[in-house]
Figure 1 (tube, helix red, strand yellow):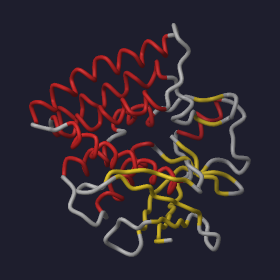
Figure 2 (cartoon, helix red, strand yellow; figure 1 turned 90 degrees about the horizontal axis):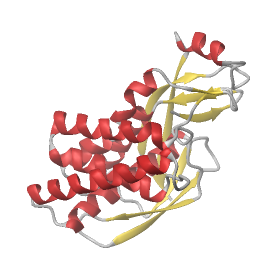
Figure 3 (tube, one colour; figure 1 turned 30 degrees about the vertical axis):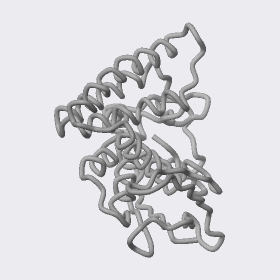
Length: 250
């Protein structure tokens, strides 16, 4: 879960919805991309689905935990489950990309003190999934560079979706490997003339504008809950609100 601040309250957005936007971004690319990559982008957070249906509560913020606040010891098994669901539902190519995206998160962003259960969960994920990824790459006839390109495109779309959802704040620089070319550094900035409108350069899409629309849960006007009981009562039937974001060339 992540939050899009929308004074006077905020909007809670689910991880699977954010992942759907990632797929939308890659489907707009100006070059044909493999369907398994597009599907993996759309479904890379499938392991979070059960958690999103019953999120845990953070008493420090008075809100549900964001995905950044959930400990690796909790979400590493969820990532494994997501890989298994991808493998069962769509096969090794999609499972490979979902698994590699989880590994990227654990190598770059997961912070865990040595000797803790969080560190152990990260190490186990990287070791176990790394072996499976190598096996799948061989079976699929993937060159390592090809897998890295697809992983990089998924990571780019993931980050761009977080910008459009309001989690990552521009200006930002994002890097991706073009499918048939070199690595490119993209810069995204907020459009000063409109809320939740953004500008990107260089422009890698076939259309002149990318528009994403979704539905989130509106938090109370004060932006937080008095306690977990209040949150649980609200979550039984939370008010919903449609939202949209735009991305245009710089």
